[in-house]
Length: 97
Image (tube, rainbow, N blue to C red; front, side, top):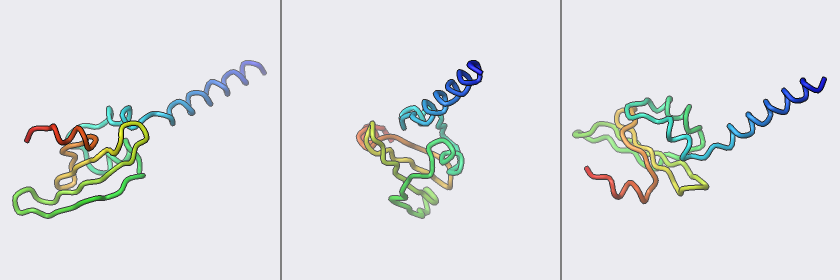
C-alpha cells in the first residue's frame, strides 16, 4: 500500500511541475515554419489576435499575443499560416530585418 501511495504522489508531483512551466520554457518547443495549430499545441489556446494583414508582397500575416506573468507579452507572427517570428515586445525591436 505504501508503494502505491508513493507512486501516486510521484505522479501528482510530475503533473504539477509540468503544468507550471513558464512561457519562456514553452517557447523552447517552437521552430520557424511551424503551423499555427502546432504553435497552439505548444503555447496553448490562451492568446489574442492583435493584428492581421493581407499584403501583395508578404501574403497573409497574422500577429497573436500571449500574456505572460514572467517576461511580459509574447508576440507570435505567422505568414501564410506558418511561424516566422516570435519574442517579447522589447526583444522584437532589436531583431534586424
